[in-house]
Length: 602
Image 1 (spheres, helix red, strand yellow):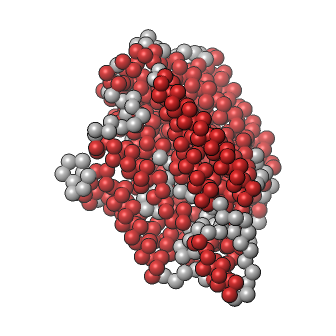
Image 2: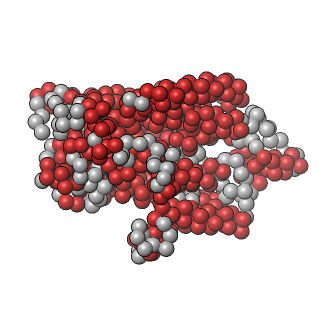
Image 3: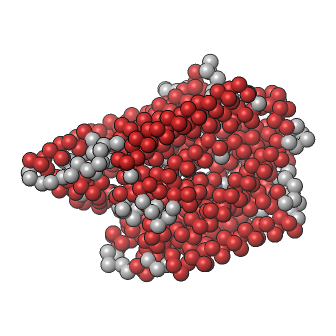
């Protein structure tokens, strides 16, 4: 691959702008912890929405999509497309609740909703569990993708990529804080979108690919391009469609797709000007994330089947790539090496943008847990704002170093995706119910967290997993792994909920007064308060039924947009028109439902 002066100018120009943003906002970001982690809760919806999209671009996402397409076809993406359901539930039900909570991190919620030592333990433990362990694993997946891109496109040794990309990102993140992340994400959004679309257009029209029509007539591509799995293949339907849509979206905790919102999505909702802006940001994010953005990556992945039909052909074309990093996900980077000067520089800048956006978000989010939920809570309750900002900057560096070392030991993106899904299986329903059912307590979450974690380790790190779920010879079908963990975990947390004491009346009444979630799940608390002569304002009308209606319409709208976009690209005009019409009708109905409920919500 031949980088020209124009390519270097684009790449280094981008680096200079991003570092300038970090330095420019560093003084204001360092004023206090709220500025450093939430930008003073003053962000508009459009800026936060673009930031959510830019953050989830990531360098590992196109690799993951490519891995899915080359292994199981376009329909393999339902493994993450299913999280649209929880995304829409967050938009129309949970976004307003998170913003009303006014907490600094979503983990601070634990001591708002629960009480006593269990709540304190849960908050501190999850600060390390999520902010350190899960966060480092997620960042290592992103860094692994950067290693593969650097190896294939620039012939760089893994450690060179890690040090080079990581050093610039950690300096930027430590200086600029959340405001620097969001401001730079505005630039990254456009760079990444233009780069992804430009690359897809050029690569599909390579002479060896021959354009969309020729590509789709290729036998290797024809078997991979269906958006839905072949209905006659029962195993594939269960694995790729039934499990994700019936079980996975509500039962699994996954970064960026947390049931009920959470993580860096919650961080952005908490940074919004008000509830209205929190809802607008998450809605914009879900439209872009699911309906439009996947298709440039999918097209490149399909084209890669023509140019590099198997892993052996990738290995032959790139002999310097170490064997432990070879995989189908490498095909995306391999295709990008065929871009011309100028577009190549823009795409490399877009990949750098994706890497920096995701890592800087994960670093700021993870360090917010360490600062607010561990350091100030456990080590130094009297910490000054300056001390908290300094600890935030130090933890940012430590998180980056740990994720870099782990990335060097990993092999492919799908491996990490599957591991994270299994670790969170069975916990998601708690995050949905805890806002609306008084009986959920701290022990519910503690038991679920440990149950899913221990079960996942047993299945992934011991002979128990292959014995139960091996592709050939396992006791159960291999697709049963997530349902198995979900069922066992659910039985454990339901048992723990009913054998332990509920939260105290004072804690429950305080939470209800602040959040006013409403609904039958809180009727016992409201009635007991009234009996005791305590005034609890029922507040606004309970909007969850309307919110669920809006959620379902939003799901239909975005999935139909996703299908119609694919069918227009495939040249399937009739089905594209039908899907577009469904999108239009569902969009109009959604506007009508939203118009009726917004006065109660906002």
